[in-house]
Image (cartoon, rainbow, N blue to C red; front, top):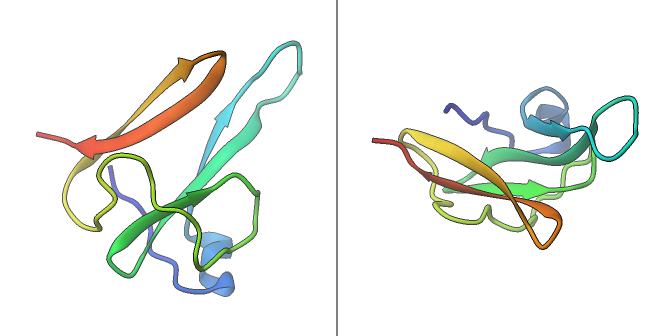
Length: 87
């Protein structure tokens, strides 16, 4: 899985991945979180279309580079995810 690089708000506008899910009876899916690479780390947050330079690193393998996959599951009724190496 390729993760785009963004180092500022202008780049983040076009260079991030939005993970969507349809929850409950809502008609359209909502953004659960966005992810992007910044420096040596993969970061995420759950605020749509906003760049946060010091956002938390993703759960799992947060270092930039290499082949990865995203695992999405539920835990205690919440949707959670982690990034892991893909072999």
